[in-house]
Figure 1 (cartoon, rainbow, N blue to C red):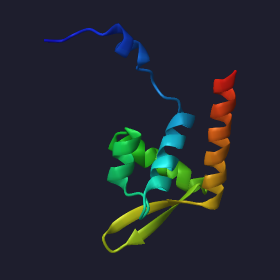
Figure 2 (cartoon, rainbow, N blue to C red):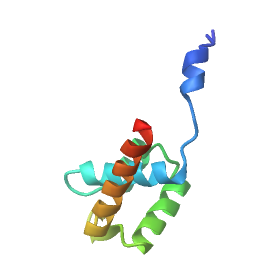
Figure 3 (cartoon, helix red, strand yellow):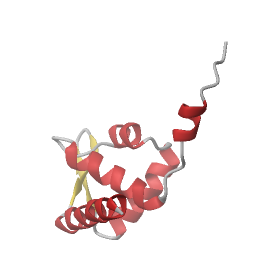
Length: 98
């Protein structure tokens, strides 16, 4: 039976692109061996198609780099990506305190 919980429903919101960029970059950065697609997809809560679009954008902007390995591709955050992520975190803190 379905139980309606208005508090839980109210807390569900769509994320904007900046939040998704942050989630993807954080997931890759936290990964010990570099982010693999499945791990990023799972932790950033994205579909496969969405993930590919965000990875392509972040790669083209120079925020992440793709590394080809014998067992598949992985992604690593570049220095530029680390600075972008720090800026996003700073902005997030600034917006929340007001």
